[in-house]
Length: 337
Picture 1 (cartoon, rainbow, N blue to C red):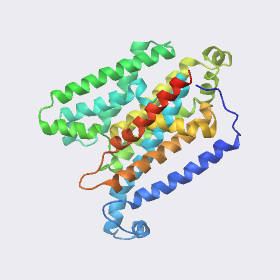
Picture 2 (cartoon, rainbow, N blue to C red):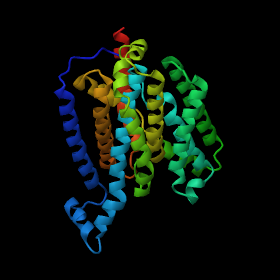
Picture 3 (cartoon, one colour):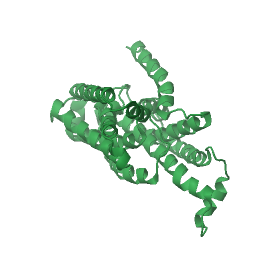
Picture 4 (tube, rainbow, N blue to C red):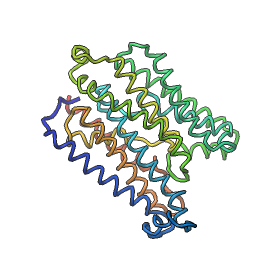
């Protein structure tokens, strides 16, 4: 990664305030956009009515959970992407590189495969979270307790490959075409038809993961000078790795378990914002969380506005935007050598 740019200390704060305002605006727009048009102010006013009107029920039961999850999932992906790029000192790093996204998806697919989601709706997010923490166990089983950066990346690739193979096996052996279609639809990623129960289940683990990732800011700054320099400054590489990997597992595992597969947010957002705040990882963490929330809220609004007979899946839209960016990033990295 590039050395730290000479960015005024006030600029990251200004960028964070601007992004917070954008997130607030997009959150309000997300509450207002949907198939059934109604005045947002009237729906909010109905919250204090003795008998809330139908529009208030739609707001609380359908649109509010979707907006909250868009904010939280986007913040998780942006924050974890920035933290992993700082830890691995690799501009191509993103949450999937440590295997968490793939194993969380596998956990949810297993729930679909055995039909548990039909009898217990919250089995799906619980299965995804279990898969995410399984990824951490496999990661350190393969890499060892004193793993270096390269070993950690290779172990993550191995875990992701195994999870993808098992997911493909589940699709191949699905008991019916309907079950296979249901799995594929979930893997494409979406925030539709989510409830406040999903928010309550995922929010605590996301919050724990965010706290762990924010704790690594100073250590990630020191790592830009190299591992030996970071140790000399008193930072433990092992502790930093554990905090980043566990924080990513908790937050991204919870996110994937309620949203399905949503790619490229953790890769795109830190790169877009890095020139604005400098190349110190600590400066990038908060703005990447806000940027991820803004991007996913905007994308979720877009899929609703673009909807005709069937709604475009959120993960498909982020992939369509993120894949060209990823190719451009590879090309730029190649030209800088």
